[in-house]
Length: 621
Image 1 (cartoon, rainbow, N blue to C red):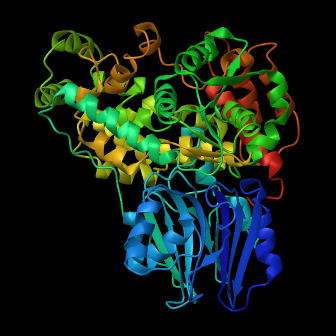
Image 2: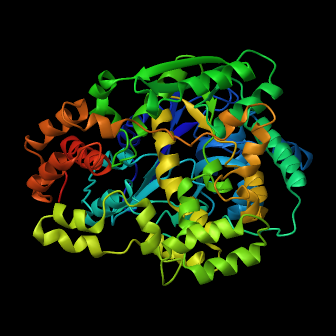
Image 3: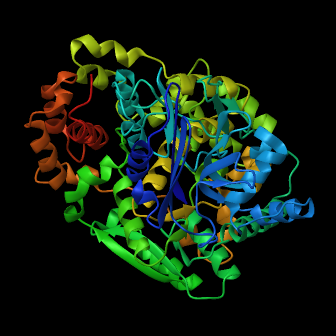
């Protein structure tokens, strides 16, 4: 796991000092070393966190001809199989790293090499034969890749801050991205907070010639549902067991010690349980909790660790941890409002004291239908369409109860309407955002987000539950969840691997029909995963209410709460945000918040917004 950088200057050669500055800006991603390659008007940089081939995996790396160079962030889990294949074809390897395998995959298959890689990755190959950069990102977007192109240069990196180190960089604020942030708590899709900075989307690649000819992003992979309606639950359960075993085993390929993030929830507990079956040595698990018991899952993490046989390390998050709020949020480079970013940062910090790599349970909710909003969305779909779907899916029990509940909450119109879906995911509604913007910017609340619009079109023929998963997999998963984990872990020099986000796991999840993901009364998602865990844990443990990785923000923003005091300080200071947003509206929202009138989502995003502007006082509006 590493940090990568690179640049092409169209009219001049690269200076070492420039690529060094770019690379050093992400030194936290790779504390074990750095490397550079400069050739003419091109430069590559790399920061390394050593996980595989500790001595031989230094980057940037080249083939024998010195015509193909790579800077790579991630892990390729099938690299040993590919390596054996290439050796049988006469390739002579100089290292035992997965990085070198990518080089020869590219030499053999060209751009199609991405289809042969099982893992998480973001990389750039500098091809001096073709005189171009080839950049690619893994299918789910586990590893980030951002880029910018101006008249003078093309530059890329693992984080936006890399691009701010380019000589002559002039980043301009993209105002609509601020409204997207307030809607979703993150900026979705290829957009960023800056007009000229773009995110390469999951499952995509691009190329750019050394003269500046940039290709359009090309999609090489997408999660597509192909449900097998004639299924046997017992057979699916056994297949799930085999797939999880295979994925966890592949994700444990490492030359360093490792542990697991263990919240005590279904997903992380399943991963930890499988790890223990595969590795018969002592291992550590890590979690974070709160003094506020209603928000803390520590007792469940303790139960899971004891049952499985892990040594649990945990910490209690208090107001003292929020003294570093500015520093932590600054790692994200743009406004990012998932409040679980703070506990994720501190559990990563805790884990890094013991191991350089952990496994996590991320992705299971999206692939296997674990979010409560999926069920709510299904129940609230228009009756006629819902009846068609239920008949098509051949539900065999509890249908009367389902319809009795559903008909009381019917909505009419297009059941796949994004406006309906947004009711489940908006953090700040249209009316509130309209009141927050100053008059000359209120029109931004009416703008459509192209990523959601395009994703909606691609999912137009899916049933209601698949549609919800489809939207989340292509937006929330990559742009919120995986962004959070990448930044929180890598800012602490820690690698996190999510076995649920694996090609083989995805192939399995694609074929599971909707009714097999939920219990008979449609009240419990991830039915197969919970059934698997029931072999080792009680019903009370497995089927308790989902908590997520939240914080007691509703309590902390109340009168006397420490987050309320922090926000008050920002609201009474000078801040560039007040050139765009109405200070009095923010104060009014804070005054109206109570435990019964919970406005903590809006308040947290306002706080994040003000902190971002304070950290970026020189931004051009």
